[in-house]
Structures are given as structure tokens and as C-alpha cells.
Image (tube, rainbow, N blue to C red):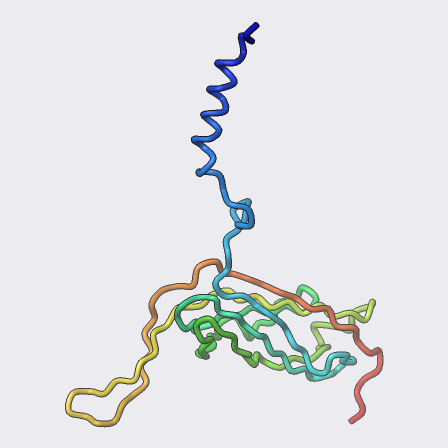
Length: 179
């Protein structure tokens, strides 16, 4: 005896096979996430265990997965949630090579200031955000009749997928550094 559901089952299976190539491949970003062409690979703070009133050096390593130079880098930096104002109108004209990495020295900062006291838990969260960047073309050109070449930077458009951010938490020493 033949099942009354057999023709429907065949139609459902045929529809599934027709739609299968349109399914999203495994491994792609989901939920609106897109692959970021420029990422913050690491944040380095020196010294790694600062005390109160300590001047710290801040560096960020960027990874460029795009096919052009990334530059005109606009950053934001927060220490325990407090924005450092110096980044509000600064752009770093440093190149991050295509398919490469670059370490960018950001501004030094003091662990404590009159507006920012020593954290009670002796932990300092340093958050760095790359807010904006531009794809750039960098060429060596000479003006008509000139033999000397000049490096010329031309913006090609905004880097998509920004802002990106990363953070580190520093264990702080409770004693001030020796002077």
C-alpha cells in the first residue's frame, strides 16, 4: 500500500535540494557581523604594572587585512571608562601596509591625575578604539619638468567596519615609582 504522504514528501525534498545552494556557508560571520578589514591586534602599556603617578607608554598594533594602505587613523582611549581628551582632534598619518601590521605609538599617559584617582581595586582598564581610517594610495611622483620625486598620499575612501576596539586590564602597584 502506498502512503498518501509520498508525493508531498518528494516535493518537500525537491524544494530543499533546490534551496540548498542558497544556504549560508559555515564559518561566515553571522548576526550582521562582518569581517573587519583593520583590527586592533594588541595593546602594549609600559610599564606593565604601573603604580600611582606613573607615566606610561601606550602602543597599539594594527592588522590590515585589506589590499590598500590604511592611514589617517583616528583613535579614542579610555582609562577606567574616562575618555582622554587629547584624542578628540588628532589623526595619525602613519601607514599600515596592505596585508600587514604596524605598531603605532599613541600618546603617553599618567596613571593618576587630579581628575583620575588610583582605582580602589588597583586595576586599570585601558580601552583603545580605532574610530576612523582611510584607505590610501601612496606614490612617488614628479612634477612636469622636475627630476626630483615627491611622495604623494591620496585618500581612496573610508575603511569600512569601524569602529573597532580592544582593551587590557593592568594590575597596578599600590606604591608610587622611585624617583
